[in-house]
Image (cartoon, rainbow, N blue to C red):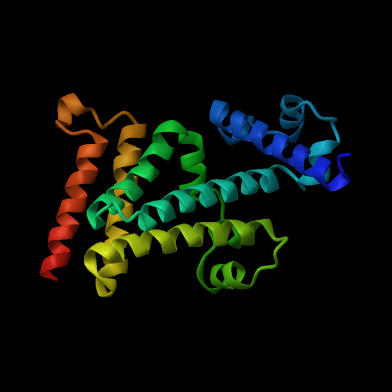
Length: 216
């Protein structure tokens, strides 16, 4: 016999999957609780029993996405068969592929959409919420998941350039990867015109940082 908790978990999963599909098809504007419920094949009231509103639903999608990205980077970091440069290349390409395969999700993860503190996550409020937010706070969960990705990524960077230079080169690598991804998404990264693919640019970025890290 299926318990009430198990049934609720199945419904929540169906809602999240339906919302992710709608996000991929039309961006955040396409995600409404009514459309999500219809796509998931549940009653009209079911989405409202699991999510307080559209923002809550999108935040849950973002949290799961950060968790998956963090897991992928952790797997790269823990792989004994990969060298430090290969791990870093894989971590950066993980971001590029999110932008390539799920552009609306990528934009939702990396772009700020408003001016409320919980959206911007700035300063001490962000730190407090990430570290001390209650387990049932969706925004705190998202911040913790994004923070875990950052920690995993910086650990990969440290394996190549050393701990002292980790944050400096980590910032350089992330901004470089985001720039490459945005160029590709906007159609401005034309291999015929620029004589470079996203993968080739990532390779160059990793080599440059590796060389700089050895001489720093």
